[in-house]
Image (cartoon, rainbow, N blue to C red; front, top):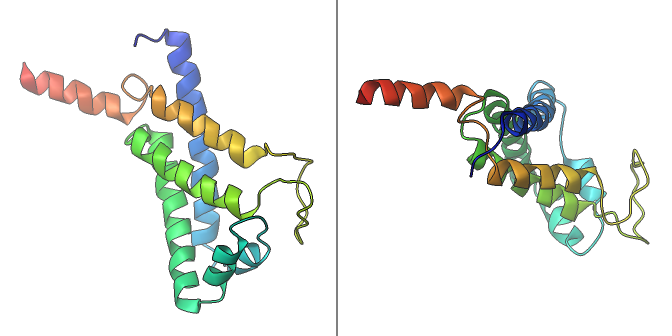
Length: 160
């Protein structure tokens, strides 16, 4: 599929913006030794809340999930910002966002202890960012705008 330069730049900007959000969220968690997802998990609502409660009540599992989450966010963000492994990062990011969405779905009748930063009904910013990752997955622009471009140029030079 041929993309115009304007489209490629827009996709690269989208990729880097989503990447920055992931990277920053991950780094904040990694650099705060007191951070834990326990309160967030215990605040879960919806069909899968028992699963999230189960994680929160098992200390070893919670520690693993916290580390996996923080490191995953950081790596996904770094890959998206730099423009390498963007499709893999988009899948990983979509997986994490799907878990966040399922733990706190914006459905009527579900009350959460932590206040929301807006008024949502079915679609919230988590779902919007997940859809942005779907676009990044299906229309990657890292071959022209990102570190992957330099890898491709090097391979082309080596082949000549």
